[in-house]
Image 1 (cartoon, rainbow, N blue to C red):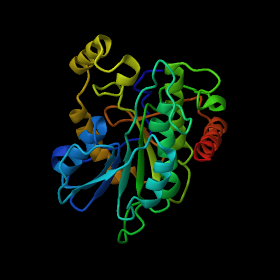
Image 2 (cartoon, rainbow, N blue to C red):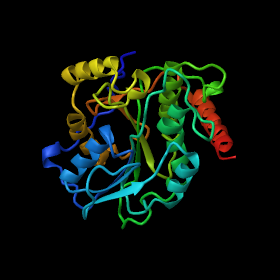
Image 3 (tube, helix red, strand yellow):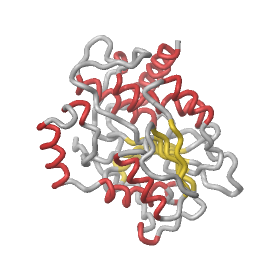
Image 4 (cartoon, rainbow, N blue to C red):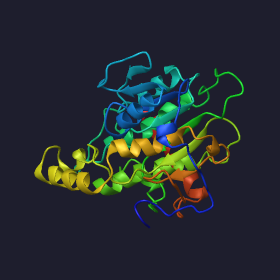
Length: 297
């Protein structure tokens, strides 16, 4: 299956072009918005008039009347749960999760005994949503569209993952561990696609773009890392170009009724991974519950 996924011909959307987009009065929360694609999306949304809250470890842009920074270390599940309970999202329209790394070649664990990529790139999102989802958008004036949660990863690429070894405790391989985060993020969206209440969930697959996400696997600043990122920068779209494609999608009114939809690097609909049937999605959600409880115990 292509890295960018298989086109979904049955879903047709026509978002407002970025240049004509007016996001005045709209509110976006970017969890992981201090670097890479999250930062690019936050900046482009600000440029079109949105109010943006950025969650991360280190602020990189000066706060303004429409930009708020919330500090959080989401390698910690206790911090992720706290954030989900306390982050002001009642007036927000959209929450976008972009934070992520790549599993290291040699296993790394957090203090809570969660494989580091799993903790940062997936389980923190699952934990935040426990307390955030039911509050999202509830204070907006009527009539307001259904609030939205966008989960960035690599959905639609056909990976199956291993819900029976979600934390890669039995056997560790960096690529295999990372694929578990990829599949779990897609399962997180698919598990909620038919829910008639709460936020509508969507998945984003940005494809390969020059960011720092591969540094943990390749060795930050090493020759392999630098050469690969140079090549990617030459042949792939920039974070800014991707953000200009995605920001209109985040607020597109035509998305109503398409909960669970997945989108490729050009903001076009793609089909879910065939191996992620209802039974396998349920196993990933059960394994996520169990791993989060273990981390918090």
